Image (cartoon, rainbow, N blue to C red):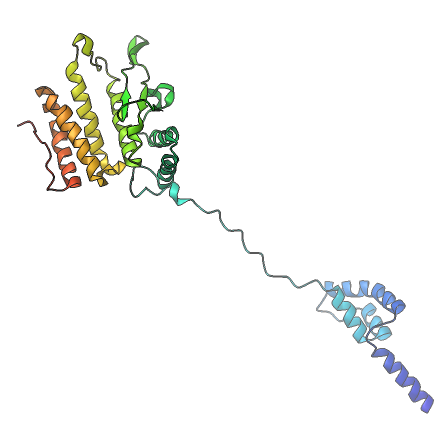
Length: 299
């Protein structure tokens, strides 16, 4: 009786051990392959015979351990979606000071001016105005305006002359130069100077648009053309940012009125008078009511 009890205790102890002997474990693992795969394929059914036989042979604890080893790892958290590429809004937002340019372009121009890279700054402004349709690059010699360190004043445009195209006279591309004075006072003055000089380019597209002081021909055109170009600066002053600089606005008006308007013939004054009066009102708003401005519209 004692021998049978001892044998039963030894058998029970064998079913409760924490792991099978290596040989038993290897055999159990091999036998488990088929049984566990069957159980996964039909989890709603009773364990297949192979699994039951294995439980009897090595015990439930060992089978449970082997089954756990064959379970797939629980899925981890889903990877976070890749962030959408950031949109540089500065390429679309108007610059606060010079709303005719985007913030991105305006900042690039300011940086070029800070580094004294004047041709680069000029190319950036002209490029932006070509892109928005303000400037036609075909009207510029080599498609560019050039910085000229030796030029007095903000800029100069030479009458380009004409060529025959299909029997018609067509203006050649204009040589446009901007001098140091256009770059010394910041973006707004440079921007405004570019528009001023480009207005002369547009003027020279017409036949008989160039004065010839040497031969006394069309001398009156110079004054008209300068008034027209300075009016363009005033009319675009909110776009360029010049409007915010009272000193610059006063200087533009001084040149327009005292240097050129008083020299325009009466016919020219009548043609430009409405724009002249409107421009005076804009300058008045910019400089304030207490600043005296010359003003002599056609009565």
